[in-house]
View 1: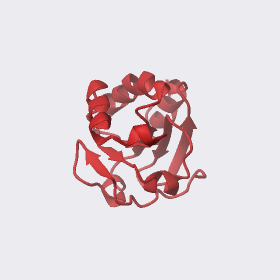
View 2: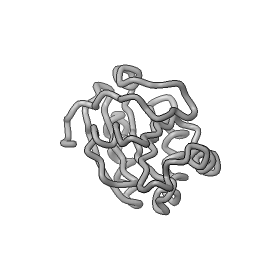
View 3: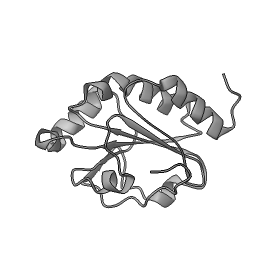
View 4: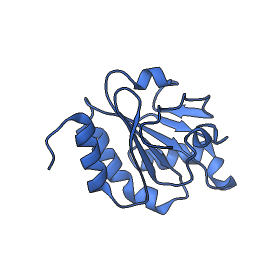
Amino acid sequence: MKLRTPMPDLPQATEWLNSGPLAKDDLIGEKPTLIHFWSISCGLCKEAMPDVNHFRDEYIDQLNVIAVHMPGSEKDLDLEQISQVAADHDMTQPIFIDNEHALTDRFENQYVPSYYLFDEEGKLRHFQAGGGGMKMLRKRVDRVLGAPQK
């Protein structure tokens, strides 16, 4: 996805954890949205989870945080295991389980972990992939929120 691209519609999920089904309209209009792709077989994803959870908690009133479980292999399709790993890593944010890669394909996403930050109008303002770079992500979130830069 290119910067300033509108957020794609959310297709039917395999399952939602921690919430009922959400639509694009639920995520735009009031506050920015951070969409985070991860996988249970991704070590970097698990290492980054405390940082993602910190974003979720710190910006709870200012930022939607949605996780997308993107399976990397057949082993990653087990819904019970996905649910268990999410619980083990304190993932209380809505989780879109994408076993069919429907949302992954709409985002043209190839990486876990990866982060897509949309402004309140639903336009992509920042993308990054990989386990590091949380300071950069924080700067982008603060910029989209209009917060003073640290």
